[in-house]
Length: 342
Image (cartoon, rainbow, N blue to C red; front, side, top):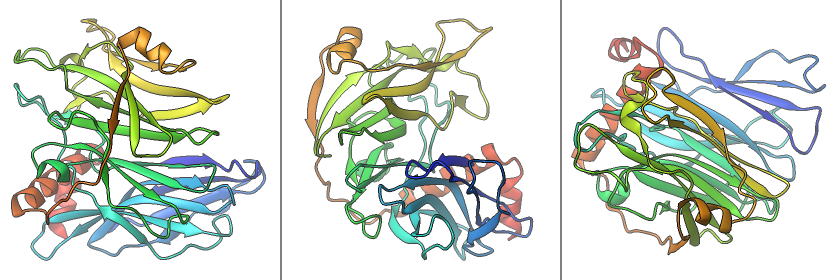
């Protein structure tokens, strides 16, 4: 699923993934190299949630002290067959030799994005999360989540840990336009401690069912509470994206940095070119906010504050179940049959 090079030791590289079991279940599986990739240790399970549960989206971040943090989504099937999801981490203080029990971050309540007019589903990052480690040892996890709207639409949630992943804050809503759908976030922290976040949203959408204007948003913060935001792309038409059980430009994207410059890596559709529907881009942000402002307009400042969220309703739980089943079936055709056979 993912590979992480250890920034504290060039000899160590870690691979982690979920392995679906025919009889049910999906443990997190880990392998590592200690000699720069010349040899690899045998893969082994580091967490097995049981036959009616599975992991997905395993992703390792490395703290400055060398501690490994494996982020994953755990899917659980209740007695009535309903799927629920939680975000958890495992910690390792010995470079993957041993691992802690799971530590819960939050429920994951994503319902997935869709075209508001045509109703076409977008195959996005619903059910997946991203993690970044800061130079001071803080951790940031982002994902799309419908809790802030009471289940009406997905927004972008962020949770922070200031103690190496042992405890986590209540989720904050980071997207500045809460009345529109936002999806597929990425997060990164630069060497100077600045937090960066990218995500797509539909703020420029119109009532025309033949088009789906979409843009990539970049937000940055020095404290996680006050953010500056720019649009990184001109509006593009998501409706022309390849259709793979949903309009699809990828369910993972990346944000990194080089020489203390944020570098978003992302996909967008091409303008009406149906022979080459999408391209991949990297955009070094050498002068923020000036570079982004010159491209897409003046930077906006907004504040992310905790939002009092009630217990998820029965309707939201059902929508989450449907979105999880849909997302898994897209990734693993036949997955729903395995679910009903458990």
